[in-house]
Image (cartoon, rainbow, N blue to C red):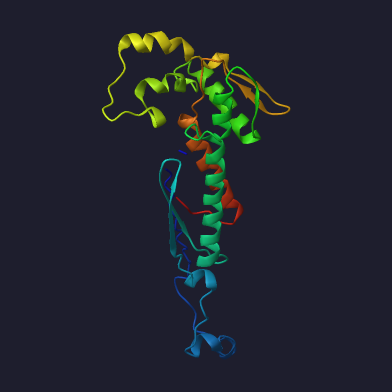
Length: 227
């Protein structure tokens, strides 16, 4: 996930002229005929092209996703929209792997089989390992096992009609389950294991990762200006 701003820089071309231009000779006048004929050169395509904004909106990752891009001299609106739709498809694919709200995702499988190694996609392993790195450098302030406490706040299937925040005693009892250092990974094949009393929650990092992948798909399609 993770919003970016883009700016267009315009260059100013300065053309120097002689302070005292000489009167052209007859030969000069004849050689410069096109300049005196009242005609001008046709502007190039790059001078006349005006980018057109293209918008695409969708529901993704539990929120509203609004993608904006622009046509280019090489990519007309249909091609730009096709590239944007392909990027959206990548969002959907990765969200289905990384969501902790879906039982059939990689994260859902890991949580359901807590205490055992579970085979996951290379992308899921990459995000988990990035999350573990973030836990290390933040000294545990960022912890991808926060979901071990998720049930206390009655999210998802555990939601209540009249929810109440958990007591300090309830939090204290379950807090030891939040510990990223207990998560284990293997590279070949890619696998992840959490302790039996723990759950993964990648919501704090997965959206940024997915947006990065979406941007990479847009660039690969030939787009450079998008938001």
